[in-house]
Length: 216
Image 1 (cartoon, rainbow, N blue to C red):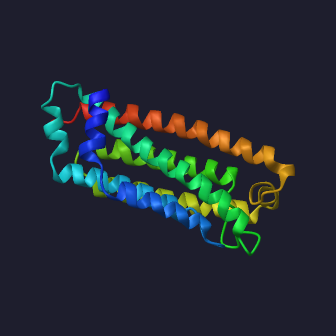
Image 2 (tube, rainbow, N blue to C red):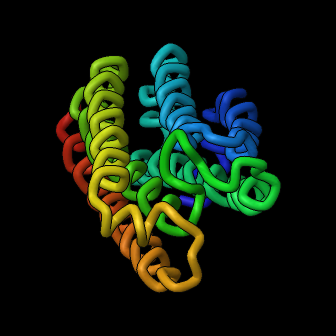
């Protein structure tokens, strides 16, 4: 498994993995829909899988003395590492952005606070649950899987923003840096982290099961 992950990091990575990390700087922009910075990570995942398909990565890897489920696990772990790297790189940008914002708040959406990052993790969990099992159903229909997962992510972003902005109780506790509601935002962050871990694990298990039935 360790060697397969090393292979993923050396051979399966796509240049956008590192380019899109720089997009974390979008959190420094005053009054900006901060979800955009994290949508690009989903696009980078798509490029990784598309590049792998064009290079017949699955077929060549399956020729190695490794289990099919380990092939899936290594790629799923790469996806998780990409997503967590984006979150970690974004954290200092969010902190600095909140301090230098001349408007004093984000007029274009939720603030980049703890609750926001919890909602981002839920977004990633949704993407993983829809994209990974859909791709490994066939091992080559990456475009269809991405369109399905990408559409769901966009619906999720719109729905979460509408809820936060239109429900007074949510806006007062989540779309703010008020210390009085810090506990609520931390709860959303922890809940998002738990859902991300469970969702990504389930996505990997479903992908393993589906890929086991694929005849390469």
